[in-house]
Image (cartoon, rainbow, N blue to C red):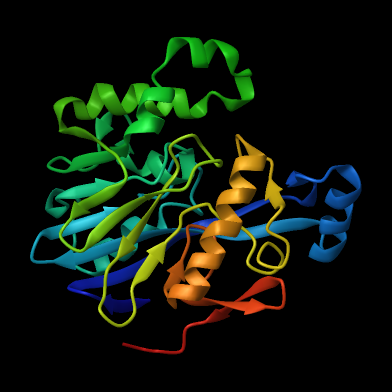
Length: 274
């Protein structure tokens, strides 16, 4: 799926499909509201796309996230095949802009014990990089949640001085990093500026297009700070609707727009093929 935003030819690459039981839903208003959200979902499990993005421009080849590589099994790593079909081999990638350090966004950086992208700089949100390399934060995190710390360690080992910590604001001509905390401390989206129809790639701000726009207080267990994630979600939905952005995410299908629906929102496909 390809669109143009500003001077970027933008390819949405689906890396695989992630499944989890509906019990991973959360709600900031408590258990009764969580149960209502599961009822609204209306199915025993969630199945969501795992996406990343390839951008071509005069600045070279840029990826936003990398998918899970092959570490999650043979049904993942499809973005690598899609890149090859576009004529983009790993050595041609100039930079990777990570949204955060969760496995389905960063494991594609690795090829076993080697760097998958031999020439790329890896741009990492500075807050996430600091948090997931902090020994005291690791010690305070239950074993089940320690994967991002291992990813950060491997990233430093394999990419070394090609890692660049970035904060909010312009990061490349036509691309602005947006701090979207809650899912992780440094969770980041990237706004591709266009004079008519800018694109917000909002990463994991929303996972479930069918229910979260109508109730932004609904989250998933993967949000490290559910209350902050809910506030971020609501704020970004408001901004996307008011600005008329095209939106795309790591776990929603295709390119979309946000519309207001009374006191809530809905996500509708963007029909502009440009």
